Amino acid sequence: MAAKRGLNAELCRSLSRCQSSAYFKAAAASLLDVEELNELRQNEKIYQAAYRKLYDAAFEAYSLNNLPQKMRDFLERCNRSLEVEYELFGGIASSLTEAEQIDRILAKMVDDGDVESPTKISVSQKTKPIISNRDRFPDVDFLDAADIRPIGTVGSTTLVLVGYEQGSQAAIVALAKTHRPSEEELFAMPLYELIGHSFDPIKITDETVRASLL
Image: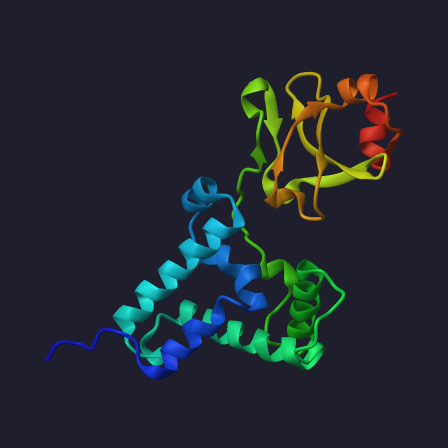
């Protein structure tokens, strides 16, 4: 007899709920490989590709028990994060941003033993950041997305390090529009050019970068 294909009621419910969960938004990229991540880059496309991969596996499995262990665990954590969201926020609109709510939910899941640590939820693969003018800098070693970090401010805007010039090791930087610069499109520039042309005050808080300017 041919194996059943499709979705039983339990699996259908799990799939329909997972996309709205904090865990899905935080860990969807873990279902994809490095090549897929580097091609997709933007969060919405990653979410769509991850959900398609989940759905295809679920359709073949028919029931939750037949899903590969990795995907069964993923769905269970998605559903658990929805429960935690209700425990923390009770369905009431919060003044926190979506990213801040996700961080709170994941922190409670860590405390409750549902996941091991926030860092293990994040994508472990090395993906390239989205640099809109990357072609201008053939002699720059750009950091992986996970290594982009804030190094100061320009006016009230966060300044992030995105790479180094080959040879001189001069810092290449960008202005971040959000608190998750590794997920946004960035416009790169040498720090020395920014210092020479900016009308806003520049404050470098990173000691290593500040020392390189001396």
